[in-house]
Image 1 (cartoon, each protein chain N blue to C red):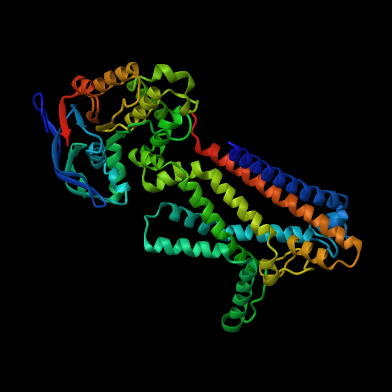
Image 2: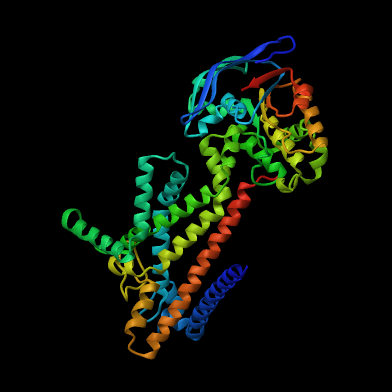
Length: 232
Length: 291
């Protein structure tokens, strides 16, 4: 692990994390600290365990039958230190809401642009009606997408371009008001202009959220990273 | 290239043959059945309104068989739909295990059981009940519905399982990553997305329950019972009426009655399918939010 910059408030500690899928060890004895409102960039070769590590932070690896995780993950969520690795299954939805994730490729929910944000808001947060509409607009503004979709929220989300879909996924996660954002190569397969747009957005979001992201691009890493974590 | 062409034309011939067979059968039934469609087909000599409302007994019409068919199909669906859907969901979502393998095998075996055996099972069940528990038990509409339900559960389970497995795995992961519980992801995201496939399974099961003759023949259907007054009574049903009159007709009128009944059964199942499609489109509309 290579650390640059001065260290602000530590809100997360990962200790001796080992993750196996069946007999294959993907990550071994990995440790790192997570700092508030900073961008942590995970770099390393394909298959080095970056995405697996991200999914360990919100326990999404639990969805894979063969995954076995050892080690400690402690995150400060809602001003309380939470032992993520010890959470019960029933506590995982709340954890995943607090530790929001955006995948490498846009993963849309079925339905319109608005449905993509309103459905999780209604189901997960129980927010409906005017409040939900306000939160939707706010999240789309945060993701710098509102101006582009304001007049066509009822259109299918699949009509959007790749960059817009990725920002919609980001807006969907932001609408649920997470504390930590996990971004898995959010600019993969996007054109340079859209990549620049999303990078600016990430820098802006880091003022409000703690960000842990996977990146394959060295220039992007230099532009964004407060902390660089190398995976081998 | 030549092999590709042969394969293409072979597929085309198959599709055209299928379509031709379908239209030939339908035309045959419509051609013979349509002239017989009138009030007398349904109520015989009885006054139409009084017969339809069940105020006068019907001796020669197929109206009691129409009502009997609808009742037995709905009862079978009511009994089968929850276990069928639940089994399909479980099979699609459960982690691989020995138990899952056994359940899959059992469902496949039930799907392969000839319906006459299911009828015999129902008949044996009533004999067992009469002998040990309930001396007054007899073959009836409920027994037919129960046997049909067991017959169609595998169709429902298989269609639900296939429809859910056809969804991209990332959909469940996305829903869970947003903080949905497994149950919420299933009800709010996966099932609405798979509803078309699930509805196809329900339609298939409905068709199977509506057309089956072997099961009901051994479990409660009779040629003449009038309108079913209770699910614990014998009843009439269209498939059996068609079977009976087409196999043992005494005169031309009875054969025409069988054709009429066949056309009515066709229309009845088509109406059930249309109703199911309407429900599906309503359901999809309900699960979508509006801004």
